[in-house]
Image (cartoon, rainbow, N blue to C red; front, side):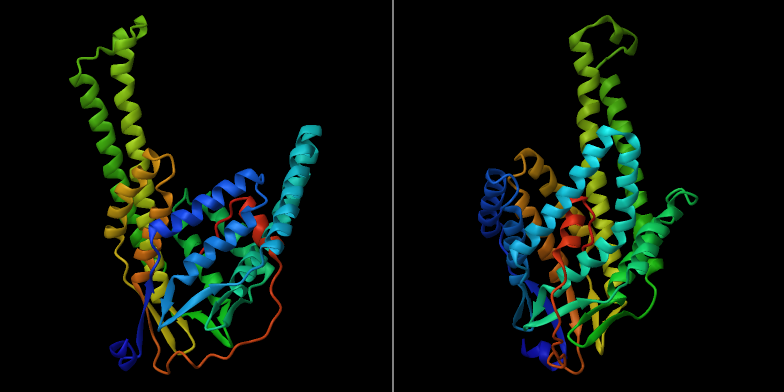
Length: 356
């Protein structure tokens, strides 16, 4: 700590443990199931309080202060909207289309409210974060920009991801200080994506080669497969199924490593007043961790998930640090009302991931 203070550089440390989080996770899961999802609002608060409370910076830890009841109300409203969409679609296709269009119109507002609510409930040294983005900004970055994926055949994806990250960062604040992007990290996003694409290509070719070698190595005659011989069918299909599952896991691992590398580039271009950020988490080490923990989650039917989540947070956060020439006591709290939970929980229901 003394060395960090002398150099005005502070490393972020994550202290969570898989066994500790498992006890929280399993209780959250069981109570959410028993209450038909009602307890999930309390589960979310318990989960975020654990992860934020185990994240330390300069001897102080973060906190998540949202009230579960507000989150529950937001989820109930979101569920009511989804129910209307489902019922309307069954009654008449036009009603389903109408509710779908209404959802697209409301989505930007939901995104802004989601980010604002969750940042306002996040505190460090009792100073809250906040978000000042506009609905029009969300329209541009979450509705219009993704349209570039169609004419570019997906090649614009790193650019879209970068702009969405920048939209959040450039409009976030801590106390009376605003976050900002010092420069563009688009090049880094593309380098990470191209590296990941290369690894995925190798994994895909490896799957094709291994599957072919296994089938023909087992002496399977493809012309005999139509004769309803179970042994031949199993010998031909089983290697393909196993190889396909391994390939999907490999793709998931590579995608996670690419996202981490892109986050590294994004945070290195981020500042908060006079404070600059650095992120040196290794995508290769992260991918290696995912390569054995993700199959373990599958083999344990999800029971190993808490250990995976803790390991992900530890590797991401322990690779981050802050350079603060003026120290960390320069921020003044800004009093504001907490944002509505409706937008946040509606985006949860429709699986819109806005994590930064």
